[in-house]
Image 1 (cartoon, rainbow, N blue to C red):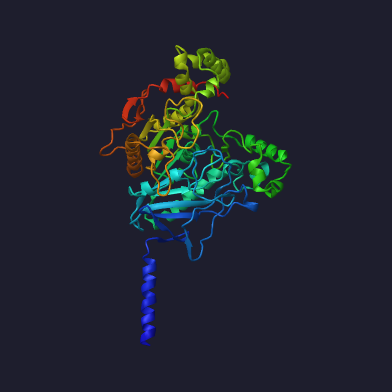
Image 2: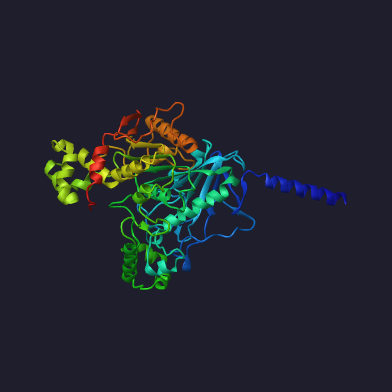
Amino acid sequence: MKFLGFVAIALATVSVQALADPLQVAAPGGSVQGMMVDGVRSFRGIPFAQPPIGPLRWREPQPLAKWAGVRMATQWSTRCKQSAAFADMRFRSTGDSEDCLYLNIWTPANAKPGMKLPVFFYVYGGGFVAGAADESRYDGASMAKKGIIVVAANYRLGNFGFFSHPELTAESPHHASGNQGLFDQVAALTWARDNIAAFGGDPSHITINGESAGAFSVSALTVSPLSRDLIVGVIGESGAAVDGRLGPVPLKTAEASGVAFGQKLGATSLAALRALPADTVLNSDAKSSPGLGLVIDGYLLPQTLDATYAARRAAHVPAMIGSNSQDMFANAVIGTDAPNVARYRAGIATLFGGNADTVLKLYPVASDADVVKVSTEVSSDHFLGQPTWKWFDLHRQSGQPTYYFRYDHIRQPAIGIPAPSMPIVGAVHSAEIEYALGNLDVAGITPLYPWTPADRQVSKVLQGYFVNFIKTGNPNGPGLPEWQAAGTSDMPWRQIIDMKTTGQPMVEQARFRAMDALPPSQ
């Protein structure tokens, strides 16, 4: 009997120790076992919805039943089905699959339920055709060391993530189709709201952030009735789903594109489309949705972003929005020919047609020496600068604290990746990500760029702004250059992020307004 009593006490001790294991979390969705990596708790590959395969291909993400026992969360999940599109994407997952709706969480080492730490929900970029939550530049360890819980989730891409079809609309309980990738983001955000307290997070304090396609996404999440009440702040980098060339399209337009996509593949019904091998869907040279793929579906996006702001239905939260000084290269205007004034004028005429004279007045060149710089300004503004400004302008007019930045820091060329054919005269698209998230160095990853002390100083400042904003809704804090809110005047304030970070009036706003008034161009 004494022996049995000893065994019972030992088992009870083991049980208490298991419950006290800081790497084991009993969340409402199911218990998970994480691991310590780089001084923080890391939980990888946590499912937040059923696998969207078979009859669930192109369906809204379906709820996942709570799993029994403790799920190991120590391996990266497969990323969503995609082609190799960008040389600088460094995945840690081993492959891609339609079974990809998983998320990753990083927390401080001492995080526990009841701490109510601020939550940072990150949405990756990649043109809605590539990217994954396991990319090394999105690693959450550095932010977690600053007292923040980081969540990064996969979402469906390309022909799997943005597909409309009349049969799919009829099948939907909401009579909507398309935006599967956005629905995935909403499902992951909702999962975070429902489960993050178990990891030590505050479900009522979630800030969302995204770059490029991620910024288009978070601009949509900021206005969607499914997500706008789930957030306390938003950060957008180089992108916005505003009306215009890259904005969401009407449902009927997207449905017609989906039908044409099926016809090209010889699949004239939804059942036939779902029976196609994943690689056939992925590798088709047809797009299943026009533009970037976002759709005014009547449910997740009942109306355009612009109309939602006009109706004052967007999330009433602080925002930090901006773009890079070289979000596109000069060759988008002048091609690969020698840069001269004649070629510049011809390029503007091709891009803007009957509005060319207006654009030439907004972006004048005095000599051949100006052509590369000005062409870069035109292409960067036309691609992402002006849409990003428009979102910023809509948001600041709501009266919420809104902070605008222009990222100017030029980094060293990448190691092992061919240099672009056109000159780099500013901060190229996506260049700020590692700096903002504190990921110049990631455990186990050889840096892609030869970082300098100047890079580390810029990262210290930019990450400091991000950390403060995530925690308080205000980027300012000790040791950082003061950043004024933009205000609502005709000359808003913006922060120039570079080796010398400073605030300036946004002199280019008049140019953005004039460009915004032009009809959309190709």
